[in-house]
Amino acid sequence: MKAMILAGGRGTRIAEESRTRPKPMIEIGGMPILWHIMKLYDAHGIRDFIICLGYRGDLIKHFFTNYRLFSSDISVDIKSGQVIFHRSNAEDWRVTLVETGEKTETGGRVKIASRYLEGDDTFLLTYGDGVGNVDIRKAIDFHRAEGRLATVTAVQPPGRFGALDIKGNKVTQFLEKPKGDGGYINGGFFVLSRKCVDYIGGESIKWENEPLEKIAKEGQLSAYRHDGFWQPMDTLRDREYLESLWLDGSAPWKIWKA
Image (cartoon, rainbow, N blue to C red; front, side, top):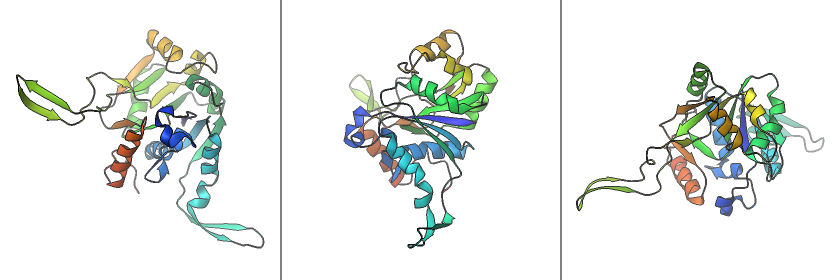
């Protein structure tokens, strides 16, 4: 099964970091957040990826074409230019990098990249800017058990501010950054039938609008509830929060072995 990752966005709300590189290449702990997302899938046995490129896709291509080189011990014959690879820490991944256009919307990117799904009837889809300790295998099993065309991982957004529980003038409970108001939102990490691609009209279509709305109206969209950790990287504050979790060794999304 393949995992498709939308990695073409500019990331205007985190312009401090994305001015010269695509949002998925912004680093957490010295590695792009895109790598963290792929490691999550890898931990659940998903190692075949389709990356939808757009803004500064050349940097993502450069990262993956040189990944083995920078993850290995090598010997270089300076005169001949021969490079011999020795011990390597590179993951056993197959990565297809697809040019989907800088201004293409999310649905259009999926449509263009779907040619590389080949014979797969079911595929995975997520965004290149959010991490979580989502159990991908359980989501796949849930999708198959439900028997619908699409499954979205439903999450509760992390709170931005602390909350006070007040009775009269007395604070009875203080909660530092609780989850949202109880409502669930789209957390990405979709499990999809390939038939979902047929709901995408063209390159200007957002996956989250007409396609998903129509699939839902037809009763073909399931919600896999994830009540664990989930955090998007929309702002510089988000990146700094994720960085702090990684550096102190408490990153909940790091479910893989070192």
